[in-house]
Image 1 (cartoon, rainbow, N blue to C red):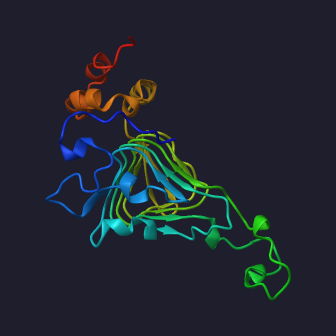
Image 2 (image 1 turned 180 degrees about the vertical axis):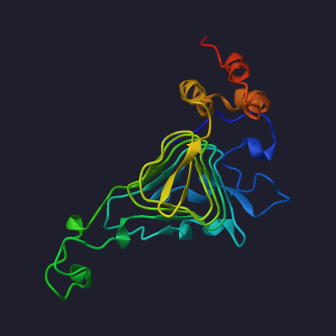
Length: 223
């Protein structure tokens, strides 16, 4: 999902997605893309950031059970806001629930033949663009969170989240739609997160309003 945006000529650090600390006075915040460059199990798009009460550079520690022998990944879109202590659980922590025992005999290599390919795998985690994940939320394996969604603090997400909805609880349920369905559909069609970064900077005031027409007027035109 994430793709590199065109880098602007501006020297403002926050306009470069490869800046580690976009706000030098706030080292508790960090862009994820430079933190995760080359990581085999985690990918993040431009301008998505983590806030941490301890060390944002340890974000990979918030991704649990990311074992190499399982084919799953965490993919985070662009312009996501991830609060402190949010956790993402991949499939390495799964156990069989439909067998006579839940004990993971094969992984020890001394009871039977290990077969990592047969390990329970619900799939990776996909986070859309412009998603806000609240403090201490937990995202379980196999979940897709749609663009523009909000995950309430301390929620446990066990199923897919529709775009532009607010969910919360354990297990999480939809609380309400964040925006009217027609506005949400227009935003997804505009896909402003894929615009050139200079145009997004121009549109940032409009994005901070509730006027979809103002944003639409700023849509880049094809040459």
